[in-house]
Image (tube, rainbow over all chains, first blue to last red):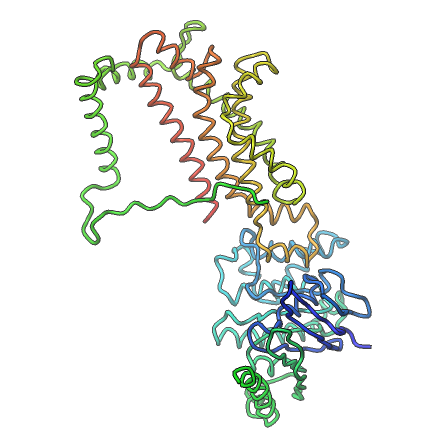
Length: 270
Length: 274
């Protein structure tokens, strides 16, 4: 049985049909990218998995349990970071640690917060407020905040769209590093179980999708968007950016994606 | 139903008319010029148009004697102007405190809950436009003391702006912050302390600023009616003693104190927004 299952999921806002008959199965530890044109309901799909929206019809299951509302087992990194601007970097993460790991004694919670802030390289900046740090740093805080909750699924809504190309590249590598840290970092393994996080990533960057994902879900254009095709990415891990760019598989996947995304556009123009 | 509120506003920056050219007067110079113009007009008016008005020179003579001995106390009907101001300020702060203590929880409730808003909003909208002085007899009947009735009136005065602005702030917490609280399972208490209140504080302080400003205006009227002590009583007493010089002096002092309070709250707001 798949880890995360979406069955016949439809979502309408009033008379406006956003998603229609979305069926998707995601395995534990898989990284899946959702790609499509603006307004194709990618973010809505993510919000449905997060439980922030309820489907109009259809079911969503995580580990066989229906998703009925938001919860820390589906940590989300919002497009605009959504950090609380009046809290410091440390407080932004620690408020989540304290809310999610309520059963843990205080010192252990403090340790968790510190560990994840160090993991994203922001321990030195812990006393700063979101307004005093760069976009890339804000995104790292948002990642640390989502990961400290030990989610089953990590939901990323165009996480690097607002960043410059250089920072984006760095953060993509960091994201893969963090994803791997769950299995490699003995400190995290002893506490969080050492499995790779399942990741659902919304993006409109083809290269980003190929570099990060195991499978790429290509959406049709809205309204009433659905899954057009699921493209597997048969590239090994760990991935090295330079080697991937030269590989034949990469070029083929990119061509296929470009084809899928532009043909959709043509049909709509016609 | 939405809550009407006083928006958190920024004062427009004054600009000189000529772009690029250096302004003729700096801020302080402009202020001095404005005061001088008023003084000249006042002098002219008191000598040419309305001889019953005291002129600035005589008024400042009286003003000086009033402020050189502000805290003397020669019995119930003869106290220094400083004591009168302190009495008024005491009532304003006490009444303001009571009003805010009621308004904050009610405002949070109104902002957070749709049904509480539906319940309270009609009451608020009907009572808000009423002059607070209309409550004076009610306070007098309930508390059987005119100084306490003044405090009651001030409490009512301060209630509305704080209530409405708190409700506005709490009700407008952006969706993204609410989502964060939902996803990571913040407790109600954490949500209130770490999200709702910090977000609403600038709204609430703006409410304080408006409320305190109106309270400082209303206390004068209330004390004229109540008698006994306070700057309002002082004005009425001076009028009965036919000393318009003292009335003008009191007006100036009331204005200075009000300005100081507003500036202090404005500075607090600015500090928080940084």
